Length: 427
Image (tube, rainbow, N blue to C red):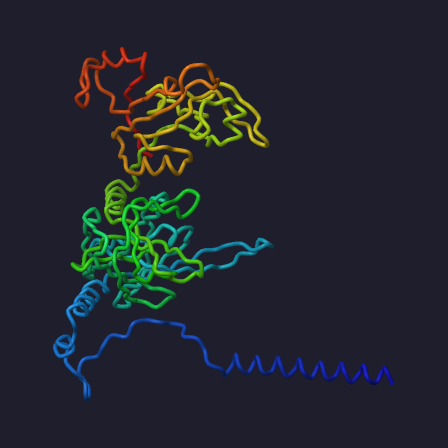
């Protein structure tokens, strides 16, 4: 009897599984499907009951007219950037990966600006412009630190609409801005908002950040990355790059890279094929509480110089690296070097702090490095141990620099601090 009941239960369970599988198959085969291609449909002129463009425009408010005008002017140059790459699963089997983002044409020759994270690691890049024309794109170069990349398409004689680049340095909080991109694959989507804040430094990863970011409440979602942020004159004033969101969708806090930063990067890439960045020429380790106490350093926050690059600007200025090796947990570190505490008067406690300062410099510019030398505490006041080293272009003997006395005078300042000359190097 028990065996018969068990057999009946097994049959019932099997029948239920068959029904569930059949329902799933039927739904997948005949049910409603998600769209595979989503794009803006252009308005068709004419037709029964249709109104002319002039009549439609006449019914718009002043604010609506600005939005419509900017969209018509800009959308043909906004690109949908599609990427393909290969990743490997747990069993090291290749898995194709597709990605999408936005970009915009800045030059009729086919140069397109976007975010580096949109095209990072891509094995192939395809660009779809506003008129649905498709082009294979070539990766020209990028500034990973600023998350800006440049790609190029070959228009093959076809005239391209290129966007005008504005001046992000003249922006004010409260100005109206418009964002156009391809959020979630919905191509040529327009959102509007205002400049909510300026001048923020937004860290986007361990090594990347947006310096002097433009904060906006214009809706920015996944897929908008790399698209233009535009003012009411139709000029690009930023590249949409990041959002602050607890949920994964827009929360009214988006950030754009200032177009002035992107212009400098694009110019370097177009003219020289690489980005010119200022480098200090040191390898450092952050000084935290335990490290400062363990090494008996005079400060609890700063950057301990481990290695100074031979022939680099810091070496020419006299910055010293470690002269002996110590074991710190699982890592060996060079100790005995200088401790950098500020650059141009701005406190530094991490490599990000250094990169933010250097990001605003160009090869040949100057920076003031404040540091401590000597690891042991003594009876002297702390500030008497701080030395200031001025990194500036190398000048010939007897020359003057920036209103300073002759170089011979610099050597007489060793009692209070040292000012030496060196040139920033480019990467």
